[in-house]
Image 1 (cartoon, rainbow, N blue to C red):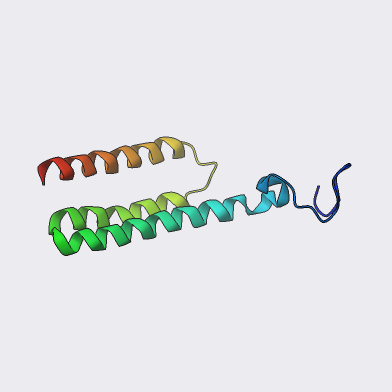
Image 2 (cartoon, rainbow, N blue to C red; image 1 turned 90 degrees about the horizontal axis):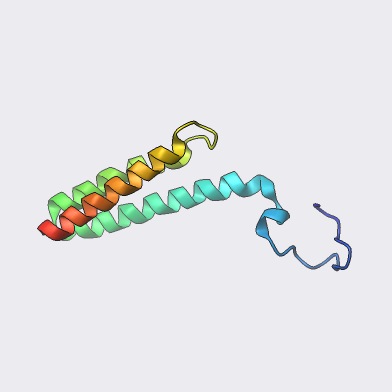
Length: 101
């Protein structure tokens, strides 16, 4: 219900769930979240790169992968498996870097 008040709720009160407000922006918010995640990895990679070359390059190499994962269509088959594999790979790489450093 966009633009109309629900029974028992004043017209000026915002809906409780953000998805009720504008479900059309879900994909845009998801895309922005993936972009923020990629930028965060880039920032962390830059900081680590100043201290350690190889771990910093590994983290920076994951940035385009993370960004590209966020650009995949939501209905593409295997997307969830691909995202899961990328997260596990990054986690294992971070664990190895932490243990070997």
